Image (cartoon, rainbow, N blue to C red; front, side, top):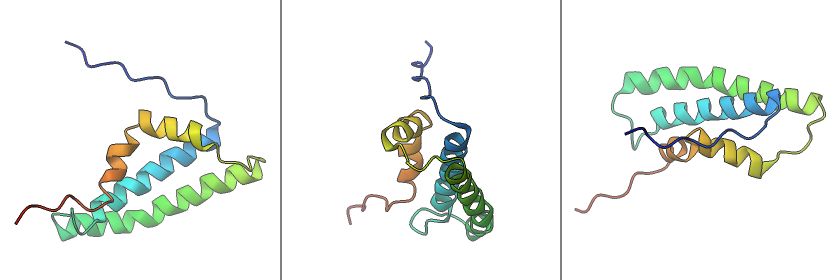
Length: 102
């Protein structure tokens, strides 16, 4: 049985697509650094080192949007793109895990 087909990505400008990609990269890195979820210091260290590049890419994407005159963030459209790209699960790794009953 085949998995259900994902909805198509909404139409995005190239700068918006770079914004979404960079944002998710930073979210993934923060999830790997999260002290409540990390398993090894080396992996968290590598993610922290990569975070600088991810933040720079995110800044560059937003700068490009601004320079091109894209002065508004279309939150509903970008949220739809994030959902298609599994953004909810990925962002969930940044939060605290549920407390285990003691």
